[in-house]
Length: 346
Ligand code: NAP
Image (cartoon, rainbow, N blue to C red; front, side, top):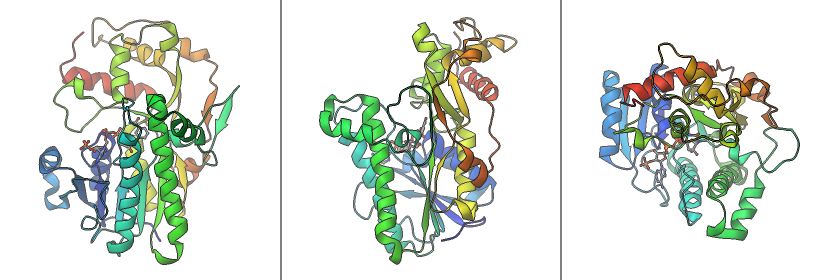
């Protein structure tokens, strides 16, 4: 139970995902070796290509089904650090188990494999979410790591497939994180590793994972494109509030969580701040020369005086991880440049 510094070897699960490829990159840059777990050889090809300069510091492990007992038995052997990011992230599930089973079983199966075969593992960093923290509220609320979103779980238990798509995702992340902490409590006396959960809100910023077209953008970054392209058109849509963090900041959080001794055993909300979608338009419209012809205007400046009600206490993150956060303007400018580079023209 101690921090893990480079040059240790880290297993990254779901290594081909939007966030995970940035985690792999930041780990390699920091001097770690990485074993990237992906579902098939072909899903790892892009990783091998973009990190070719790192040679054998990046290897792949094929884990076809993360819900199977023993799925990670081989992959955890010989690593000192595990970064568990794999979990389905979308709001389109009909059967809640489509999200809940891989989220929960994926997490417990990593921990069970580490317990049995990961004798060198000292820390497991798990990507949770703010959706495991916040629930319904009235007025203006500041949530912190003591809060749990039990509401989403009750709602899904009660309504099943009829629950909302977002609620099903929230329940999957809440149940997965609870299962991780329960595993640690139940196995305290027989394990020699600890866990850290990183709980981010919306993650935005330029993707470096494999994307054949912008139609394949991951769930969160596609919201930025939807805003720029005018799919979010009404005042209500553009003035919906949220909290956000750049994908590169969250990747850095996953590395810092491995390196800081005091992070062990902690949930850590990793958030940069509040926003409304109008803020995305305001930054995009301020770029000169204009990157695209048809960026909607909306109600410029509406975010400056917006009465935010959903807030997070990020003091634990500041104290334990000491991250430098990428600012909102840079996230939007870099996202717009990425859309342009991928052929978006409107
Ligand atoms: P993503 O690009 O969709 O990546 C998800 C990863 O999980 C992929 O590697 C995917 O593998 C893997 N995965 C999903 N379902 C799986 C299954 N049933 N079996 C095996 N692997 C599976 O999403 P992301 O945005 O990077 O999300 C990464 C993590 O961050 C997730 O835990 C998510 O809950 C969390 N998170 C994301 C956000 C956000 O705004 N993006 C915010 C907070 C937390 P395949 O490609 O093979 O499907």
